[in-house]
Image (tube, rainbow, N blue to C red):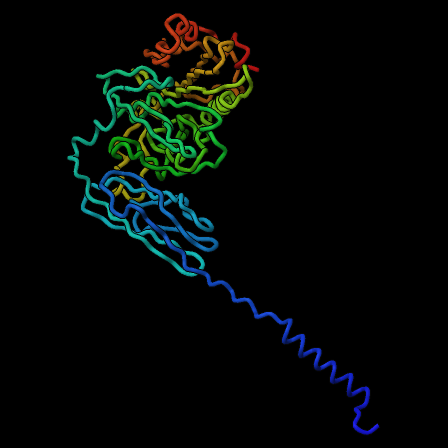
Length: 421
């Protein structure tokens, strides 16, 4: 028929129109890829004094990143990560020389970024830096604190931490500048302040003391063989957040501990103490376990290796002696014994003596024990006090009265079922 296309032409024309229509109305504009922003690093306090110390810095990045410093006196932990992190710890050593500067550089997807830190020279004269940073006595009413003495040459310090929005004490210690160990470290322990985080391994200098008054164990352990950097408050007792855990890696919390003893019976005791602290129940539970962990050097420290050390060990040399103290001139006493004193409290008059019970342990610093903690290894708090020569939980008597205080101190924990259930 005139004026009409063939059916095949009509079909082809309609197909073309449908295809064009679909292209016009259903095709979406291609999505633009989000640009990868370069990483950034922010240091809140960019100028610090000459004291050793640390602070949190913030890393902002897309994906994985690494971070480094331009000087050995400045360290960061962790040195790598992914995404944003405002809990990176920047630590610096004491500066007795001229004003010094260093940079912190973060590298990641999109490039690198740097921030600088300036540290002024320490202004305190050297003779005044060895002692006098702490308190002569522990003028606090915390239940975990042992007896202290004004003229014994030892000094009292406390590290604080924040759990959630609550600022609280992490641990306290009594420092011996001559032997470079703490005779005791004291702290409260419960499920709330133990936490369930990770170990930091952030070996560092204690910012409360100059580095000349403490062992520097940042990059190495004690020279020789057979000794570990033994924690007094265990790292696993403070995994509630990173900074709380970092504080357990200060040299002031360490002692030269027999390697196998540290990883054997002592580690098992630490695990049992945490289990006791985390117990629950109306009468079987624990509200707070007050802990004193300590070492006993003795009047005549035992000799190690040979007569060259006279009961002391030296520290391993670091790569840069101009930054850290010369470890050849520093000796740390090897404790002969270690102890733990425990005061368990439950807010229930039916438990123990007005809610309190005591338990103590005393071990030689040697690989001579099995792996199991038994009740035969325990002793009363009074018996441990006889060995130590000073009182434990010195503030308890004022809280419970003289008679109950005596009952708590003299009770044999081996006869108390609760400890061994």
